[in-house]
Length: 547
Image 1: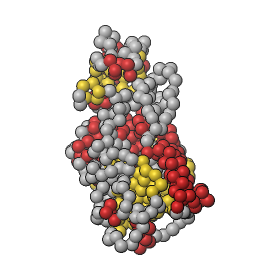
Image 2 (image 1 turned 120 degrees about the vertical axis):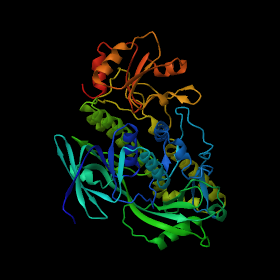
Image 3 (image 1 turned 30 degrees about the horizontal axis):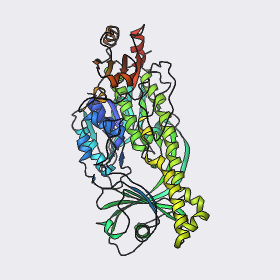
Image 4 (image 1 turned 90 degrees about the horizontal axis):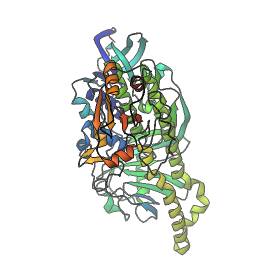
């Protein structure tokens, strides 16, 4: 190993980890004009995609970045049916129930958003985000480079890195260090941060299976996700990776460790099929642990964490990666404000105060979804009748299927989780005294109450209110007679980027409820009122984290 060398360049931000969260943060920083160094110990190749749902909120950020078309054309078959079904096996087995969905291509946007969810598994989505990163000359992406240690000082952070190909170790300087390096985050360990919750929910094993024309080998209607239930209860799932010939097969497992190889997972796939004459190939096998954990703290000083480094969740609901993208957007504008000099010291404190409650809420919801999915394990006595032939078995299957289908709807319909999170008690939000609305899961009513996501309204074909937000603060004015000069002057005095947009749309005015609404760069409402505040400078200092 060579002697430690020093890299003379000082970076505003160094990001450790180039999964979807690190890529999104680096891309957002580049989009905001902030140079950063993105460090990844791997090669960037994805052999086991860990996610496939890109939520409606993440797609709103993709719309902001101008990459929606890239996501839609990344490689997933958007014509493929998206039904969820619970079966005993695909060929000759029982189908207990089904939740029908249109294909991603045909699914309409929800009324609360200009976008809709997408199916873009990680082996498709990461390359899209990397392309987004690479379109900015401000991001230096280094693969096969490992984070070794960090030392914070008054001016910034000294970061020790190692080139895993050459063995060379070297140092870089940065103003801020962000760990997006997963559940076993080295940055988190360097900070000594702890996580609380359930370290083991299940020991699960995934396999990626290649099977051409699977639909022709069984008698069930095509679907995106199948849940397999036997006399012992729920035991496995199968998900369409690309909507063509690749499938993610999961043996859900329990609290007991099992070591499975390719032959074992081939047997799991054959049981799911209900036959053993189907040609297929096991492409990869990955054991993993399903967890429910949230970090006690998200960082301190100039070093912070995001994504799986901050929260680990069961994938039941598709919340994990999408929470991480929200972390990245929250950090992106915060770091830009600090690097550019107009942000105050409370911004990074606000990041933890805002994002940690969202993580606690979402990982608990995901665990409850898991419990619902696995609930047939606790009903083995009742399940026996559902596997009996004849009229009595038919009645038992119908009763079980209807109850299970009704219970699982909460996982399939989660617009409230994806859009309804709010930043209650944030030090960089000015409350207006209105009561907090219910925190719902399957439904969502838009609100412009401070701390909430600013509502979507179509202002004209192709132009949403959401399209106005992102670069800096935006002051929406719904009555042109109301003066905004005091806030403009206060923003100019503090160097805060502020744009005033006059909105003449009656529906938007009704939904935003006040004549003036100040929206942050991340698209959340920071302040609202019917007239200028008595001290506009105090409001600006609060929302920029300097109060």
